[in-house]
Image 1: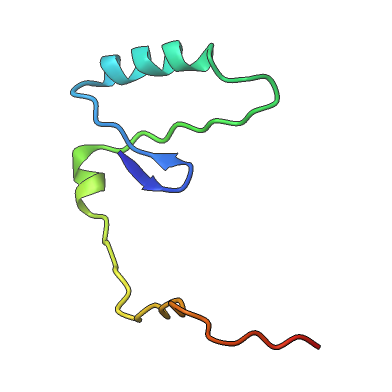
Image 2: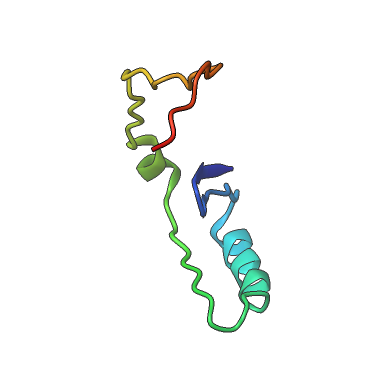
Length: 70
């Protein structure tokens, strides 16, 4: 699942399955690229906090009636 841009999380049922997946993925990393693997237990992930902002986004102006050129 995508958590942020370029940040993904995947659940593995066991440590061995997680290590096997990392082994398979490592050989596919392009030359010069960087890839980091973080291992979290269910308990550690359960202690994360999600915050969602309440600030409203500005709406784009739908129709422009007049354009001013300098």
